[in-house]
Length: 205
Image (cartoon, rainbow, N blue to C red):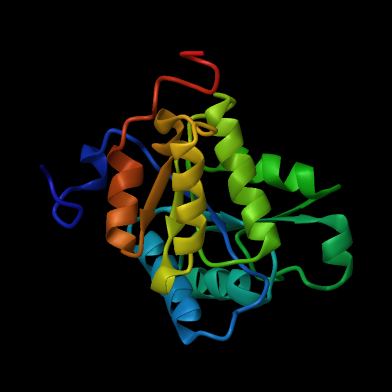
């Protein structure tokens, strides 16, 4: 199998031009979270992959945007009017879209992206990534959702997902919509190569 490090972008079956990044509006108390945000931004820019994110200038969101912009990458922000009014919007992006509400933000972010990566984050990050997963499960779009598991941050969440699969509240095929790894290169390789599951939410009832 072609490795993530020696394959060219054009050799991958899943074309990824942009990735939606979900992450915290805080940086957290572990320096590893910020370091992962910086590393992810650098990697995406190096791979020629644009970033779509929530448009904020604070927290891990701001770290991702600042790092990618400084490295010459494309960064598209999508921010609701109410949050922008609090002066939390980033002022130096490739593009900044202002939308009426959170639902519009999530819809536009997914429309502009080809896959999803979640860094550590709080309620908002979970809301965004699980809506993206639900829409994939319903076949509203065909986008895999990656969890960058920095220092085991997502381990408790993975335990819940595994339990939900075990008790047959999540179909095993929909479990395949998630990519779980702490390694950024492996994350991109999986997003670029993993086939999108054919079976969806109600198949096999």
